[in-house]
Length: 329
Length: 157
Image (tube, rainbow over all chains, first blue to last red; front, side):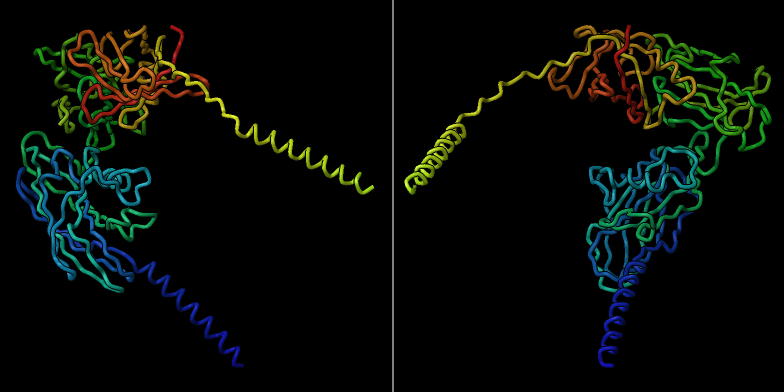
């Protein structure tokens, strides 16, 4: 009888230890509880974003907290952002993580920015010309067993430093510097995308928030780069609805003030249907427009047409052409 | 009888000693050092064609129309000169001269087109794939952030 009781006691102890261990594993998590971000701003304004997060962990540790922000590359967020935080474990500020630092949990030695892009991409945005910019707390934050720490990050961003009319959905991720963006679960690296932020600047709207009729890949290129242009005939109802043969029609402008028009509907200008109602053409601009040696193409105005060239669709489903500027920044 | 056994023992001992001496002598023999062979100077002489190409990691060879264009590209190396036929976006856009940072152990290659003012440098990989030499160049013909990687193999001109 005594032995039987002892056996039960040992088993009970074993299961209790196991249960606590499982609890420790599952209860270890970070949360983004809210993001407050303005909906509009003028290019060059400093906006204030308030990100509230919670860190629950049953294990004691001392780690630096990392905040990553997704934004258009041309906003150069790394140089235009300051972040401070308040928490029950003290207050402080965050600094930019240098691009030479390899991210924790990165399998191929990627830096934090690349690793974040690999894991989370560009979220609900439509133009892949964005970057994740990582910041980390200057001091490590020490946590005792079972602490539940709420923290508030105050993020000040000078938006739209390129001065351009832009709308984009900024992304935010929170993690720590030793676990990084680890494994299959996002328990330790929650991320959220804010609502669309409209930045009022100059020029045509660069709309990351909504699908566009024409998508460029790469987004920034020169006339000596291969360029893919995709016409998405599903975004709105265009005059080309129902057409299954779409052609590219463009006029290139050169640095010596000449215009070169290529608008014949032939094999070279025919677009390939890569997905239903999505048509793509890839070309080397210098060859496509037959640029002479020493002649530089500065931009292209273009339309999509039907087989006989009688129907043309331009920028925003209007008669105005789409414009592609050959610039790198 | 006893002396006979002793003799056999002595013989065994002698033989063992002989063996030991031979073993010791051969063990002490200085090993001949393998003569230093000069690493060959790498040569690209011949005509090369593109077998694979990527732009920012995207396979260009799978893009409609582009594969045909890329597969017609030829670059011919003759000693320190090169000539290009059927041009595509490339590290240089005209004929000219090239050189390695080190002809025996090349890690990068520099092209200087006759018409260009500045030389263009690329990392250089020279692997053997299925018994054939390949070489891989990494460069940006347009914007710096657009990175191209071309792998070429030798073909008949």
